[in-house]
Image 1 (cartoon, one colour):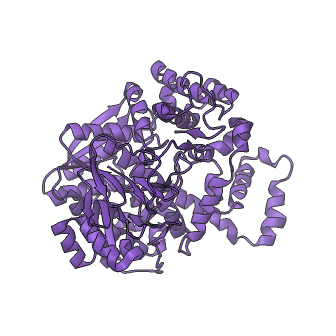
Image 2: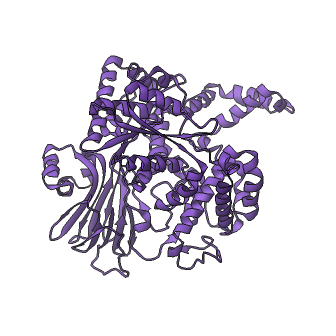
Image 3: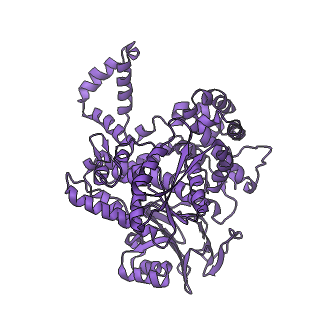
Length: 614
């Protein structure tokens, strides 16, 4: 969508800028831009601004300028009057960059959830940027050992890091100021939870339903719009509201899997019948994955291991074939209103903090540590509960991380481990947790998930897969108005006892079918492990990738053999996730192999035991 290369000091770049296909080159004061037609650009004798997305300026004068002259012009006026505070006055999905060549300064910002990426690198006085980490102009770039480890820990790479050692991604709700001597980033917005003890339910219900309808209506303007429909509360709400807004049945799309425990198509059908939707279904097969996995893995600008990306792309592709040009997604409902099961689970663990310290330390814990006590099922569960409850958040959420369960030393080679910090994921999560401006446990968990679940994982997945399918996407639940509304809700209305998203479900009674309100959360899981043990072609695809990755001297060859020959056949649903993230990583590396300056695809020299040049 965009690439830029500018000098902040007047010195010329030491490398040529290579443009992605389909971008228009614009020579500007101090450098060069290459942009897609959808990017708004405003240029003067000493300044240039590029903006993309759908920004909504809260200042009426700026909103009129954006409508009449383009978003980039409005952004220039906003930066001129408010500088670094300007992004705080803009709602919607956006990314923006402004270059002041005369003063050697660059300003940039992304929206509250970073849904439109801004990646950048600095080489002396040269500032380069793009909407993709793999297209930031510059010399050959190194793949980072730490980024490889973090990817295998999180299944994605959290911002501000990227797979490349010298390329950064601007974090959600952050702005950037680059000058001749430094690059500084920081949040221009942070959620502050009011946390009232109670509220006027009828009034808040009316406001909530109005805000949802308005958000859906904004996303549907002037587009041939459809919606993802999983059958959950979020996607069903968006689909139902879209039907109301359009005044006719919208096209909705569902993906199913013919595997026990992985299919909830029936709930999508319930929603379709209830709202009278123009509903389309497709059941993904293992053969579909043979084509989709390499294609989807290679498309992302860095390794991305969320397995639901593949069925998401298949679903989006079918919508595109029907002439839909924008899809609406239900992402955000769980994280705004308390819908993930882990919120209730962590509340249960928090109750242990209420036990007097002397009682827990001198009576309960010693009793559960007695020899032979682990043979009693109830005592064994009690011991497991205390073991987890004693670990503080956010570390407790990663107790069952695959790397911990399998053993880091048994997975990775000593040379690889010598060059990384295995505590890095925990350190960055603790920092995020400490930065949250909330007192109650539920709101602290929600704000934490706004980064690690939404901004770093779910949104890149949906944006990336719809982009690959040739579609735009909208997230009605992440409208600034709904986000601000959620900050004012009583915490107990999000998690009432152990009841998830109490307010959300109560407010939607009479709108959503009762069966969907009452259903347990299922998710969008892909039965990859099950299929990889039963479908020869899929097994071969996975095995070849894992074995190929093992030759890169990052993971131990004996671990790769054990994973494929013992662990996966014994517990395919569980260990299939480890196979998946290794397979996707290898496919991404292979797709970028032509750009690796000293790596032979056949010789399989070490990829990242020393810095690898891209």
